[in-house]
Length: 80
Image 1 (cartoon, rainbow, N blue to C red):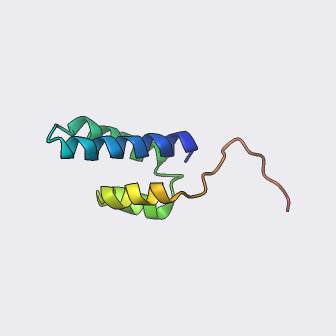
Image 2: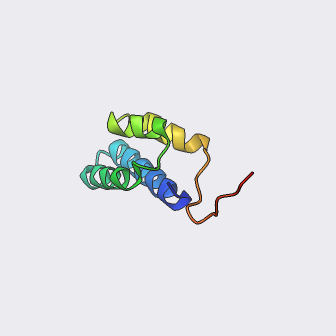
C-alpha cells in the first residue's frame, strides 16, 4: 500500500464520518472505501484489512491515524 492510497482511504473515512455527523448520505463514501480496499487488499497491513473487511471503520481510521510503515514499491531490494 502506498502513502497516497493510505491518505486517500483516511480522507474518505473522515468524509464518511463528517457526513454521518451532518446526517447526510454516505453511500458514495462507502462505495469509495470498498473500491480503495479492493485496490490495497494485497498490500495493506493485515490489521487494516481485518478492520475494513468487518466494516470497523472507526478502528480503521484510528489505525491510519497512528501511522505505520508504508512499503515503497519502487524501492530496490537490498542484500543486507
